[in-house]
Image 1 (cartoon, rainbow, N blue to C red):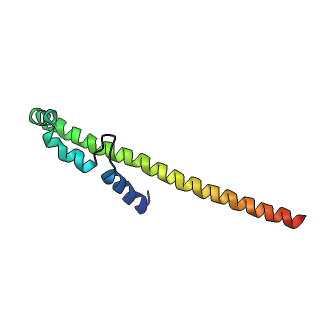
Image 2: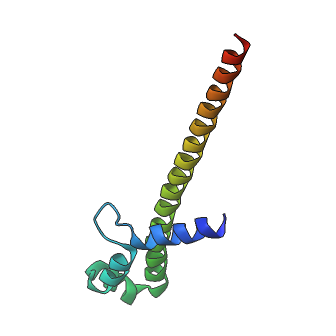
Image 3: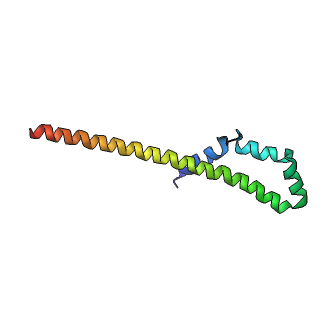
Length: 98
């Protein structure tokens, strides 16, 4: 991963809303208000910590998918431009040969 891709990955993970309309910051900030999470925290702090890690991991996994889609889109666009350029060159060669 290039530094630009890494920075974009973090940007996507921290600024993009999930399917419930929450950003990573919102999801973490809401944990103290989640009664089941607080009960889990009282019962088993390590389980609660694991749950919080899963939330972060989900956001970063989703961000990786978005980043890959962006990168594929960029590559596809570049491939289309290369193919079009080859077509133009081929047309010029054919025109010169006639």
